[in-house]
Image (tube, rainbow, N blue to C red):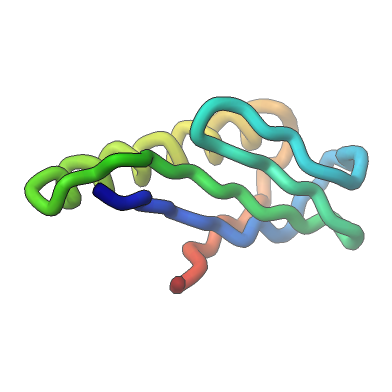
Length: 84
């Protein structure tokens, strides 16, 4: 049983957010100087046979977050998966 985590580097944010972290269940958004941010999304207690399905679910959550940020005015936002 392990944690499966997907992390994004977010660049080119056009809406100014307060610097700092905002955690919520199985996710954390961290805004940084220079209109960049990080997004971490994870699931705990993943068995080997659940990895593919869980990874797909994490990617879908990341895509939903990206769409929401575009809806809020970040039209030219760039999401880059961070390699761990």
